[in-house]
Length: 170
Image (cartoon, rainbow, N blue to C red; front, top):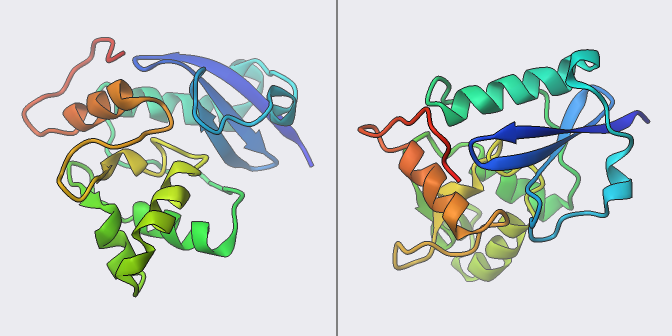
């Protein structure tokens, strides 16, 4: 198994992109909630020497400048079956739209799963790529985000149709 990573400067600050073999397996901020141990990221590589990580960095930067709305990358998140069900729902939330943990629980067939959905959303190792920032609390307010609420707010503002920023978001 070929695990490696690169740290990329973005409008959200430095981001660690992790790849395993031919898929992106992680996107982490420096103070990321549930950030795995650095040793699990494999060796650091130069983007110029790794086409997959370079492409992920390019697409992420395009998204953060408003030039991209969807990612076209191979992903392979590690998680249990329930987490994957939740992450699959997250991946269907359109750019510029939001949902709630309760709505996701209903989509999975059981409204009482909202708290478990929240835990799975919080464990998403591909935040931004798999848009967990588009999930709000039942009252429509911002709730937890692995990269911090300021980043979540910045991502939501970026996706507002009237606001596209090429500057630094965070």
